[in-house]
Length: 529
Image (cartoon, rainbow, N blue to C red; front, side):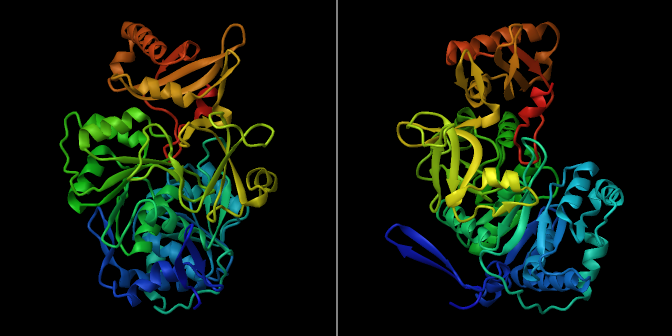
């Protein structure tokens, strides 16, 4: 095989991905498109009117790689990226990889203390950031004893360096299993961890999920409300369109229902990627809005399990399917999913091609079908390790290539995988293990409930019972005398649809639930009060 070549070969068991021994991911994702005649085609269309073609992307990636090298940043060093969804994200990410430097996209919604931790933890040589985030990023770097050598704003630092750099850049020699980039975990269970991903990992997810599960193709237009800085959005809004030669729509601001509907109307995407929280908000907006969604083939969801009721209501209101899937930062994208041909509301589906799943009990042995246990996954996009976390790496990246996901699952009688929550979110009520997801799903079916989260709370006898935290469609319904009546109504609603012991004993009506940037509910914060 030629250096940087990828071959997808059909086999009796499906397909096999073969990569050249010398492999830099920037070549198949960026460089090849000009050679294949897509130079004039847009790869990026932004909500504020900017267009970038494949030829312009290839040139700016080379310039950016040269610019970073000119600063003395060596292959293997880390460059943190706190960059909004814009073309500069592409330039910095792929420019670093092509030059052998390791890009590390970070959540743009964090605070100075979070960035201070990640800058120190990563030992980064440089931080690239959008000017909008300077108020949190710059104090974080200033507070450190060991500061990054370079602080580069995208619009008045990196852009200037790119403009003056050479347009030619040979790809830094690498192997498919060499480190390519990092992603920090979302922090749904505590302090984030740096997941170290290999050069090959984006090829695997783009082919296995993008092509073989979604059926993504060159004429697709991809619009992801989920942002580029986390694993789900990185695939949806960058690697999938680059892999098939499509076009990505980038929306920099927070994705409200109005903005997402307007983006769909203007840019006519064929594939839309959201999260359950946003789908719930969009459904509420559809009570008065009438957006044109006719360009969409179907929609995708990840980040949290999609409640069956939201799946059904979205299909009723729009005529569109939402393909729910499960994935993780450590696996890079979705590894269990529903498909366009097979949707199971309220269930994650089956393993994506190229991935294996098993559910194990506390003894580490596989449980019987129908029994709950911890989900282990195996596939070629699994992160190599957590940076500077040997104990947590050993507990998560297991022998034989298995990943301990920490999620509780069971397989139903037809073999579909059903999410039951994080292992540390499970409740033992009356001596019986209970999933918060089941109770939350029942609550969301109530017409007055927009979102719900369930955690365990000790009663007067120190026994654990379910406690509900609820966001209402009409916030006034949870105030004053109306709150007591609504509590009774919701309690009966749960008793009628769940086993008797599963109904919430306490109700809290709140304006919003604590979440990570990926849309995952941070139940540990609710448990802490």
